Length: 114
Length: 112
Image 1 (cartoon, each protein chain N blue to C red):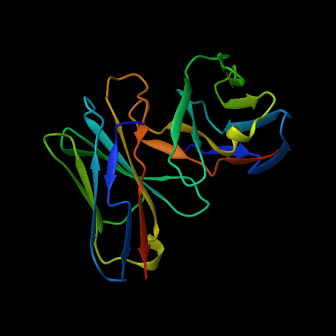
Image 2: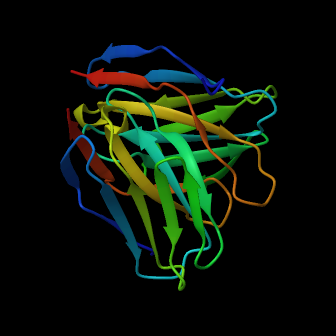
């Protein structure tokens, strides 16, 4: 196990609703990245947080937002849910040291939007 | 931007056969990482390659980074049913920052 936990494990929402997903990083890691993985596809980078600041963003609209807390845990918020937001949401933690950080992935949250 | 293409997309092999997946980039990569995702699971880090021409082995798995740092391969010798899953080669978009760009990966099925 990686020591990265996510909650909830599964979630069902309806279109237009808002959702908050949570991630607890591995001890000692100061960076959290979030990915969206649609069925049959590779994970797509959403954004990364380093020391509570957004540190890069992929091609996702502003209704995808996040937070990182002083204990380095993180939240992913998605507003105005759309059907296409149905996916596995993965968070990955790492410790930035300037030299090829290994990403430790959590088990993911499976979101279904109806 | 950089594009990393991985082939094949799917591979079915008989248990005991060898398997290879290839990654090709249009530009030079600073590093490449390999991850494995079991069905229903999450990506798990396998290895990172940084140096030109680098070869690393993990038991039956052999990883190579091309001399020009534009391609990489993963070779599995004598596949087992435990090797089933999707193998992703990915690169760090901003250079060692963890902003990983995944492709579709290669999904391996092993028939017992």
